[in-house]
Image (cartoon, rainbow, N blue to C red; front, side, top):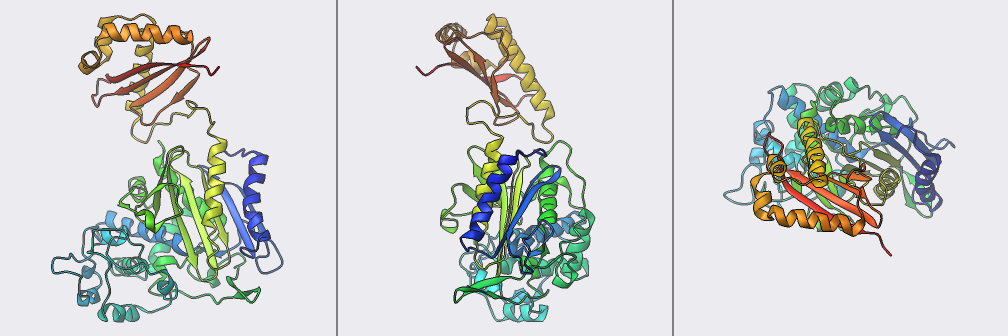
Length: 481
C-alpha cells in the first residue's frame, strides 16, 4: 500500500475537498496509513492562517482520546495496580454516595466503564463542556447523585462520564495526574510528540474550532485540561494519529510492534465486548459493538473495522482501520457537528475496495497471529485434497478426513458427484488455483479453471492437531452464457 495509486489518492482527496466546497467546515485534512505508517495525506480550506491544513496541523481529536485512556488503564492492569473487575468505588470514594438504580445493582466496575455499560445516560452535549472541571467538582457531581438508564452491566450507552471516572482511576492508581500518566505511558514511548493535552504544548499550528452563525464561522475558545480530559482532551495531527492507528492495527500481525501496551492488550481493545444497538447508530451499514475505547464494526466484505469518532465544540475527528489489512484513514475538520466520520468511512471503503477485486475468490489469505501452524495444516490438507480429487482413493480419503465426511455423504456418492462437477465445467484438476478465499486459518476455498466455467473446492479442518478435513465441498460454477 506504500505505493498508493495516484488516481486513488485523487479520489480520496476529492471526498474531503467537496466538504470544504459545500461549506461543511472551513478546513478538512485527511491521511491514509498502512502497517508502515502514513502513506498519503491532503488538506483543503483555510486552517486559520490563510493556509490549507497539512498532516502536521494540530486539531482537537476529542473522543479519539478514549482509546488512549483505555490503553493507559490496561498498562496499569498489566502492572498489577488495578483489576478490570474492581468496583469504581475502590478508586473514587465519592461514587459510594451514588444511589444505584435497584437494590441488586452492582457497583460499576472498570470493565463496565471501559465498555460503556455502567448504566449512565448518554451525555455528549453536557460532557463536552465539562473538560476543565476539577476533581472536587467531579466529586460534587457524584455526591449530588446520578441518573441511570439501565442496571450497570446490562447494556450499552455511550458515556463520557464513565471515561472521566476511568481517568480518575488512572490518576489514583498511578499516583500522578491522568494527563501525565497517559503521556508517559502511551504517547511519548511511541514518539507521538505532537499529541498533547494543552494547545500551548503543541509544536505545530493549532487550528481554531468554529461553529456556523449568521452565515459565517464563529470562533470558539479552547478549553484546558481537567477532570474530563480523559474523554476527549487530546490535540493531535494526522501524522501522529495515523501512527497510533498503525500501532494498534499491528497487534493483529505475526510480528506486532512492541510497546508499553502489549499486543495482547491492544487486541483486547479491538474486540467486540458490548453490542451497540442499531438505534444508537441508525446510519450505520454494519453490525457494531464497543471494545475498550474503540468501536468494532463487522463488514461482510472487508471484515472487522475498528474506529472511533471525536466531536467537541468546534471540532470533528475520526480514525478507522481494517484489522485484516492494516489499512486505515484519519481525518479532522474544525466545525461543530461536521461529522467527518462520514467522509472517513467513504474514504476507507475506497482504499479497501482498491485492493479487493469484485470477483469472488480473489481475497488474499493472511493467517492471524499465533495461527501459523493451523494455516500450514490447511495448506497441507489442500494439497492432499487436490491429490484425492485427481485420483480418488478411499484409503487416502480416510487418511485426510475425519470419519464424519464418509458418514455424511458416502464416498461412492462423493466420487460420483466430483466426477459430474468436473465434467460440467471441464475442470483441469492439475491446474493451479485461479483464486483463493479464507474466512479463518482452518478454512480455505479455491477455484480450478475449466473450459466452460470453474470448479469450487472448499475445506474446513476439525479442531484436531492432526489437521484432518471435516468439511469437503466440490461444486461446479458454469460460466454465464
